[in-house]
Length: 281
Image 1 (cartoon, rainbow, N blue to C red):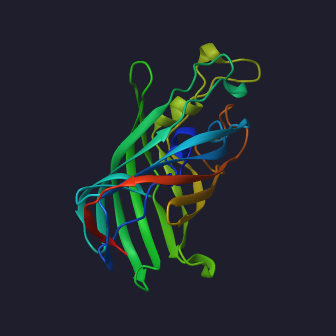
Image 2 (image 1 turned 45 degrees about the vertical axis):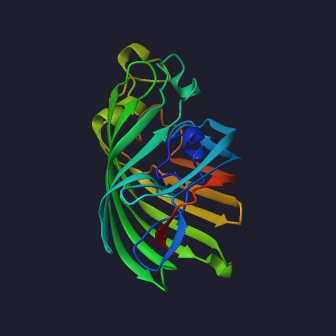
């Protein structure tokens, strides 16, 4: 999976960087019901949007594709297809945020724990031309976030609607696929409070107490590039968020007005189903 364009921390997300190919109902072909593999990659990212601490990690890349009629695992993530029409999909979608070690701006504050996000996502297929070589989608997800270490804790809601342009055989290179995406991001007060508030007991001379509100949290831009060879899958991404105008921009925990990450990886296909099913071309 190339992660959703909103990315807080990329270690766990990049561990599933290589999943599958997008499905549609036009121009079908026969493909294995499932495939699996394993690979390795690397990712660089900020601790959280607004942090000035950057980390680089090597990451394992588990590869899995499942072309089921209801459940699919592909480059858009693990999805339950509730509605699947030529112009509309209603899915169940998710995201993962990795643990943040003690960041300098948060020194003495509770650590941010790893979290998972789950919720519905509506995909509107606006353009589909040249047998799927050029697509334009409007993706509208909304997810509830929960911490997953220790006692689970609900930490709020997030929505990041985006326009995504998908191009096959990008730049005249056969088999290469590129996605360009952009859109605003929104969080509720509880989510903003988890990342950006400073409780009075953690205030210092350089880190005053702050109560983060909910609302607009920036605009995202992302590019992904993928290629399936005979037995190897390659993918890379570049992601940038501008935090100018975000509701939490006055938080003392915001040290930069942007967030960025890059990553790449390879996965070797180790096995596949002998059962063939019909998927998009």
